[in-house]
Image (tube, rainbow over all chains, first blue to last red; front, side, top):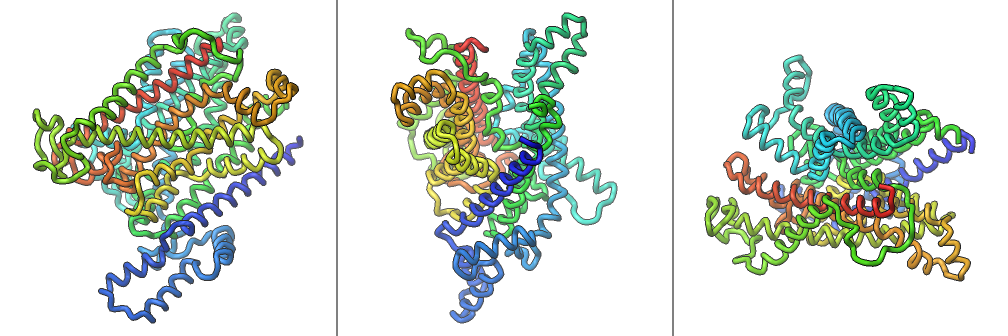
Length: 333
Length: 305
């Protein structure tokens, strides 16, 4: 199969996945027995102490349906939804922060989420791979199994437990970090940047711990398998040092699947952002989603979900397209 | 962290060597299965499982009812872990929480395993256009991030949900990874001699799937099952911690939700927050050791460990 045909096929799959993903997010709330417009009207009416006339309510309903793309039959709604999302990348206004556009809210929060999550994901990946490599390369020695043990202990712990424990230990028992972090928004000055970094350390530590265990275990398993390969034995017989064998022979070959994993977990960032940001009240996409879900602010929720579907699908596409460049064995096939 | 990636279970995927070896199981006991990891894992699961299912029979009162006892009592002979700010006994709440979480985990895992096995096996074995369409859906479901979807659903059905609706939703959005793994195994089996043998002997597709391929992949399905239990408990607990599950039902997540929302950290009620942390870590460690232990045992059984 030619390169072009491969790229075209993979890209077609990408579009199809995006399309189905968007369709499912569109259908989801409409299959639910609850209508957001009714909810909004109920809220407004309770604020007005029920003084609204039926005509005013009917008018409001019509207005809201236009605003949130709910007018017409389901097929018309679907088409206009696709048009808005794909062509204009417009999710309409937020309900809670009307008339702020959802896309504006997302753009403001995005740097926060990306800054925290990208950094901690990459650090966890680097550390985990180093520890995993040593644990895997020296897997016949007792000391190495202690390293693996760290991974076994850390990996199955659910993230929320990790976050609460770290909070308990580093903010309460040893008050190194603030219990309720503050993140100044607005114009950035150096002291502000310092404060943000200091306050972000706690969520970053939990994120690194959470990703660490997985990377250790996975790299260890890969390194053990690679260490048994004939070319590593050959390197030993020709006199290459332990260090050279570990880094140049085992590491480089065991790294490939880990690169895939890194790219995938970068795509999953929004998933991870949610819990971290909620627990540490960090002002990113996750916190916006949390607020939106309490206030029934659906446009914001759809905006964030669409963004995460886009991120995951794109990460997958990029991996598949650059993989042949990284692994010469695939290229020759 | 990345919930969906955890769901993919790196260890099973990475440790699992390519399917190789003889079909069928050696007669005479299951002792070959035992290794240190599996033993420790099974003991933890057995103790916690039996404990959480038998103990509730002796519970003095339903721990989910509020204001049963005085509030904020310290640890004592009557209340082993004290009582919380809602007037519930922490020890009994925790016991019920483990029971409910385990039950949800097992139910979701049964659902996910059935769907994933049927979809994965049929896609891998039948192939062709059918496989392409099915895999398109699998890929899409993998791409849809679970947590945001659950949050939307949580916001939509807030308060009107039952505990088991939450489980159902986790099944709907959680089967895809496992289906992918099963399909990969079915693919590698499709061209094997004994499958051709069965086909030439006149077995139809359903027969081959059920009698030839299923026994072969059942070991992996078992490991996948345990991992799904882990994943389901984790997902529900995560939802509960942010208050979007049915938080009135005691689960490992809802107990932390209440502790956090009553600021147990500030008021110094350590037992309320530390006890569920220890219980959760132990339970998850037990599940994880069991799953990797099984994996190791099956691998060494095939002589490729």
